[in-house]
Amino acid sequence: MAKSKKRYVCQACGSVSHRWQGQCPDCAEWNTLVEDAPATVFSQKHDLSSGGRAIAFEPLDAPGEVLMRRTTGLAEFDRALGGGLVPGSAILMGGDPGIGKSTLLLQAAAKIAKAGSETVYVSGEEAAGQVRLRASRLGLADAPIRLAAATSVRDILTTLNTMAPPALLVIDSIQTMHSDTIEGAPGTVSQVRGCAFELIRYAKENGVALVLVGHVTKDGTIAGPRVLEHMVDVVMSFEGERSHQYRILRSLKNRFGPVDEIGVFAMAGQGLDEVANPSMLFLSGRDEPMAGSAVFPALEGTRPVLIEVQALIVRLQSGATPRRAVVGWDNGRLAMLLAVLEARCGLNFSSAEVYLNVAGGYRLTDPAADLAVGAALVSALADRPLPAKSVWFGEVSLAGEVRPVAHSALRLRESAKLGFDCGFGPVEDKAGTAASSAFRYRGIRQLANLVDQVMATT
Image 1 (cartoon, one colour):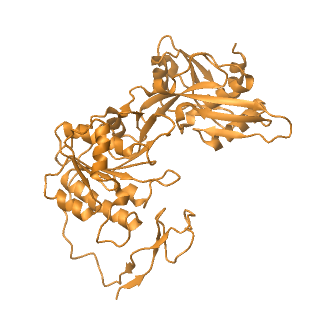
Image 2 (cartoon, one colour):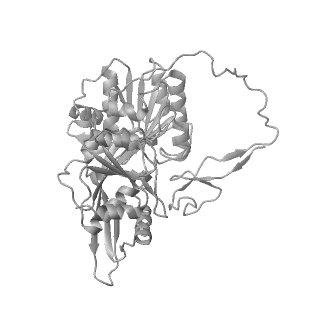
Image 3 (cartoon, one colour):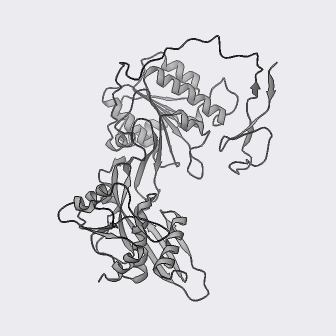
C-alpha cells in the first residue's frame, strides 16, 4: 500500500516541510506554510523501468526545421530577447506592480497582430472591458487581438485547441490561473507549478511563443516556486522607479540569446516609448563639471550605457555619528571602497557623512564602477571637479590596485561616440587607443594615483 504523508509548502519561497510551523525556516516569512497535496511514497513493487513507450534518439546534426525568430515590432524588446520571439518558447516576465508589464505586452501583441499574425491575450486580473479601455488610451483599439478574461486553464486550453495555434499567447498573470485537477487556491505553489506546466506543454507542442506575467515579492524576486524559473526558457525583469520615467527590461535567463541584455523604455502618455540611446537619457542635464560627479561607462549585456555617479561629503561636528546613504549601488561595496581609500590613500571619511547616488534611478551591479565611485568620492572630498568629458572605469581590490575589466574597448568607443575625449582605467588595458584618434586614455595602477590625479586638476 502507498503511504500518505502530510507536507506543508511555503507560499513565498516554495520550501517543503513535513510539519506546520508559524515561520518558514528558509525565507523567515510568517504564516506562509500551507498544507499541500499528500506526497505518495511508492514501494519497490512499482518499477518504472518497464511498461513505457520507447523513445527515438536523434544525432545533434540531424536535419530539422530551422526556427525563425519573430520580431515584436519593438526593437528594445527584441534586443532583450536576443533578436525576437522563438516559436515554442516560454517567457516569464516579472516586475513591480504598476511598472508597465501589461502595457508593454499589450503594445507588443498589438504590433504582432497588426503584422498579420494571430495573437491571444488572456487576462486573469482585469475584465475584458478594462483591457479594451487601456488599449484605447494607448491608441491600440484597432489591433486584431483575440482578447479574453479567464482564469481556468482547462477552459483556456480547450478554447485554444479549437483554433489554429497563435503566434503569441500572453497570460496575465500566472498567479491568477487555476486548474481544477489540483487542490489549492490560485497563486499557491502547486497551482502555479501545475498551470505553468500545462501552458508550457501546449506552447512546445504547437510552436506558440508563450509569455507568462509573474508577480514579485517585496524583495523583487518572482513569487511562487523557484522551479517556475527553471521550466521556462527566458526570465525577464521589468525594472524602474515610479518617480522616474525610464523602464529597463532585463534578461536574467535566456536559452536563445545573451544574458543580462537590456532594453530601455520611457513611460509616456501614450504608453512606453523606446529609448534608442539610453546614455543620453541618463546623462541629460550635465552642463558643467561639478565636484563629486563622475561618468561611468557601464555594460549591460552587449550594450554600453554611460551613467553619472554623484557623491556628496558633509563634514560633521566631533562626536556625531556619520551617515552612509546609497541609492543605486551596493551599500557593502561602498563601505569596502571607503575603507580602501582610508587605509591605502590616507583619506579621512570617518568624521563625514557620505551620500552616493546613481543619476536617473539606475541600479549599478557592474564591478567596474569601483573607480568611478572612488573618483566621485575623492572629488567631493577635495571639492574639485574631475576633468571635463572624462569617463572612469576599473575594479578596485582591497590592496588599492585598479584591475582590468571586460570589454574596455566597447566602453571607450561608446564614450568617444558621445563626445567624451578622455578615459581613466587600468594600466594594463590598452583599449583606449582603439576608441578614436582624438581620444586620450590614462592608466591608473593604484588608487593613490587617482587621488594625485584629482588633486592636480584645476
